[in-house]
Length: 193
Image (cartoon, rainbow, N blue to C red; front, side, top):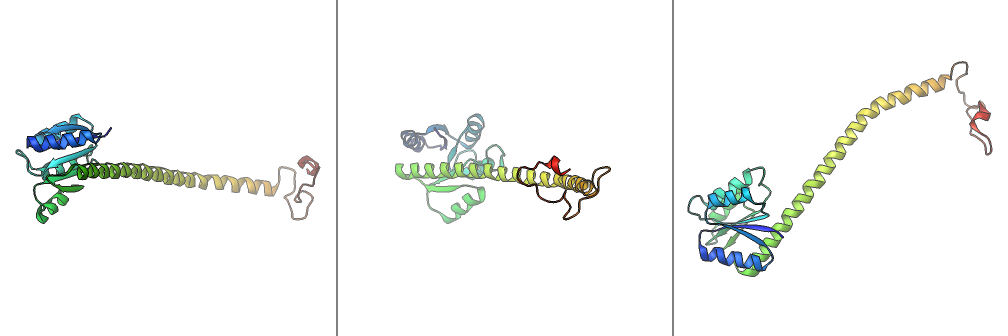
């Protein structure tokens, strides 16, 4: 079950968001201001943050910026909740690192769809990061292998030269010589040497 942190200083709005999310199958943690939101985020493993843009102590933009700048939380999706659809505020939200913006009041269907989409995108980003890590690991393995194969190819070349010269007391292999022809059915290599 995904955990959603709801940061909203309006009790009614916070209660409505909490009820809708819990009915949608989410675990909800609430905070009444920005500092409490950051403390709760540090204390609990959250999968999504819904944060009111206007909070009493620090605004939602600052909260979002703090979440996105911290290495431990920068991958958590943040949706800023605004009281109006203002282009300037949207731009501020994007600058702060918000993953999306919703205008309050958010109806239950839109809220649940928004949560589902943000959580799915976060999951896909985690998978992409794992795949990227695997590709980097494979690339390093190829580099290491290439690095060691340089030495290996020198060893193979050395032994090929040794075999080409023959073992002590043996002549080098020559095309058409009995030792250079293919082994015939029923013949063993020792028959040729």
